[in-house]
Image 1 (cartoon, chains in turn orange, green):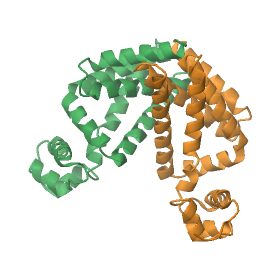
Image 2 (cartoon, each protein chain N blue to C red; image 1 turned 90 degrees about the vertical axis):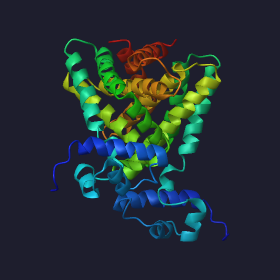
Image 3 (spheres, rainbow over the protein chains, first blue to last red; image 1 turned 180 degrees about the vertical axis):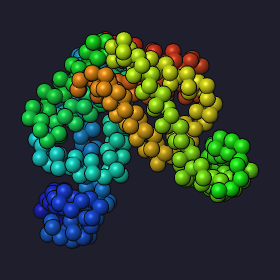
Length: 188
Length: 188
């Protein structure tokens, strides 16, 4: 192990995002990311397995936050209302990192391989939410359908929020999306 | 071009599915598929770009059937009811090919790369359904949410149907899943 580098993890992530955004993901090398961050390639590989992982390093944390918020709310709320609490929690996290999240999303949308990875993360989120619902006594297929509904609301709300011209708050867009899903499934 | 081979397309698909199921997808070569079908590699490549495409060759047809059924129903039905008509149409198509569909699903579930491809096809289906809804006057975000709801119902109903121990009809499982989604979003 080399010497300790203050906040190397965050500096590498910021440098990577800058470069992916400026030059494109494919055109950026790990050597360039390390140089931009004022660190070495060795240090990069102590923090990330490869240049793709930089973009998905917080996915686990994100999923955990969502699942934990839903699990907490399930004690006293119906599944759909617990999912709304989870959507509020992730909206807050994403809003705190708004610029970074938007840049990241633009990088992902420009690359089919990254889009695939992003889809897999959403599928994993749906599976984790369904699992949480089942552990709180929700039976199948209700658990899977509620989880899919939660992820659908997240996807649609998030996509509107990251669109360049959207000025409304993410938590509000999520609530609107959820209301819209309720209206649609009620046949309106 | 070589001489015309009667039903080469279908024979290659059947041979590929047999081999993927017997030996695994990774372990099967195009040469082996051609040999099993009693055809040449050249003939294989006149019909399929690669061994993965054999598994997804009917995805376009499947999506078109779904979209066309939804579009036809939208003239007189609410979006969610039009989606139910589409789910009925694809259920019928899948039921007609039940054994083949189950074998294919087992092959896909054993391989992460194929699972990714399958996820992309579902995303493409959701986008096509949303587009159809918009062209019939459904506004956003209702169009995207209805499409996501339709795909969620499809996924959950299909997964139950392909599970080995499920004896009920696919169309019935789809209707149950849709009813369950309605109940869940209504807060029950």
